[in-house]
Amino acid sequence: MQMPRFAVPEALVTEILSKLSVKSIIRFNCVCKYWCSSFQTPRFISKHYHNNLKNNNLNPLLQRLDGNADLAFFSQLSVEKDENFLVKQNIRFPFFIHNSPHVWGACHGLFCLHSSCMNEFEVAIWNPLTREIKILPPSSVQRPTYPGLTCDLVIFDCGAFEFDFKTDDYKFIRFVTLCYVDSKCGIESPDDVSQVELYSLKSDSWKEIPSPNYRPFDSYLGNNCLDGICYWQITMGNSPYEKVMILSFDMANEKFSVSPILEFIGFFLKTNIEVLVFNESVGVLVYPVEGIDKSFDLWVMNGGVWTKQFSIESIPGVVNPLGFWKNDELFLLNTNYEVVLFDPSTQELKVLGINTYLDHHREYVSLFFYAESLVSINGIQEHKDHIIRQLVGDASNKY
Image (cartoon, rainbow, N blue to C red; front, side):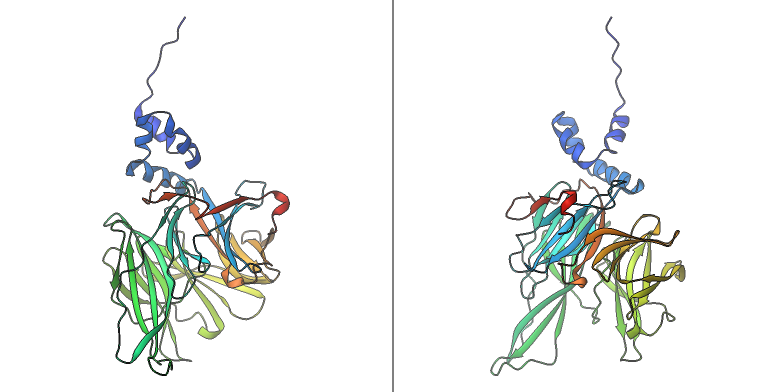
């Protein structure tokens, strides 16, 4: 006897599919044309991404530098329960032929990669799950000219990548410093010139934004954007009376603003201050510059008031923080160049077996967290000329 067929409601099918991994969804593209087209709709892409966020399905990506070859690479870490953040694969970017790429922002599962080389401006947006990459066009912003001076050096720094909800657009902002020399004798000019450039993915173009006349500090923790606004630390005044402030940029109205930060965090030159986003709030992580036994204070802004979220009294043998994981656990780099994980609830410090001693540059080691995303960037599929992926076995966990 033939069993009767039951039609599954379309809404239920969409709900089920939106909870699958990107890998499974890509595989199901060939099931039928309707599914294939549904997976590309903004509604499904948004639902799928927010399901991953809701379930806390985050993936860690470790930014590193091979000191022997002077080449940047990224290590994708496993989040499987018993694998203790083993390196699954290493990823290299031969597209960046002039110098090593930095991650200058992660948003909705997308990464913005920027060359660290001065005078060269290779930039790309990359979706590591769909393996789509878009190489950004060179900036069309004009550099100012001055009689008797030649622009000798262009420096790019303090970039941020965020989504503009008002225009439904991904934007990338970066600060530019122009250094000039005397055209005849080559002596450096004492005055640098600052510019700010903004890239729009929707228009695939650059434009200049009025400079705020402040030079921000790069955020080593990498998560300094929230709800379309990017945040940096700046200082005002002269040493030793400098005041620490927060510079913010709203991607929607494309304007800067400055707001005060804590006035009781300690002497600026003896204290590291990292601006970050913590549990959907803007915060600062404060820890001493000197010493290898670090204490940490986390402050967050709630309703215009700074509140201390928690304090970690002392963690022995660590150099700098890499970022917060689930349940307020903190990734750090220790004095042996190992990545460690601190659990504030148990005070346990776990060595993860990821040794970066060959990286040689502690300041380059960074950790980024992202949720799987189907967002398309109108780019091209990964090619060995752009990205090389190398699977790593358990025995090869120390690169």
